[in-house]
Image 1: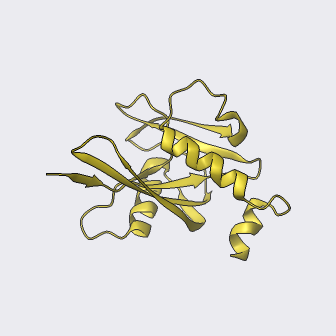
Image 2 (image 1 turned 30 degrees about the vertical axis):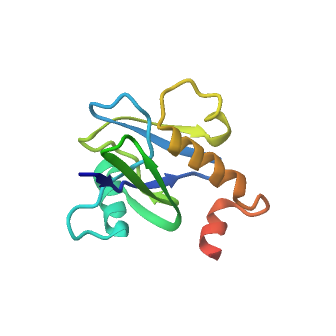
Image 3 (image 1 turned 90 degrees about the horizontal axis):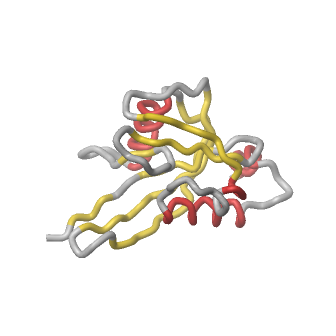
Length: 143
């Protein structure tokens, strides 16, 4: 029986075009903040809950970016839901997060640290397609 996992992730960025990455406890890979929805939880509610639990802050603005689908193996498939946005408040790591860091999106391709490839590609594509003449904050608010 095939299992479909649907993680909901957020590209959290700042005014310096840096992206927030986290390392969850027990995982040596860098990833975007996010989680899989609990039973009867919407994608948006899962996103807000996971940001609150993982980063101890709240989302100030966000929007849907894209969904992607890939097969890990014959039994497990992933359908990732990506949002982008900004957070309010000081960043404090939740109990499930071992580490965090901000990295400029252009450095991701050169970065030697382990990161999930689909997330890395999604971040790079997001920044390459974002209008260059607007700040990212106004880009979100104008949508």
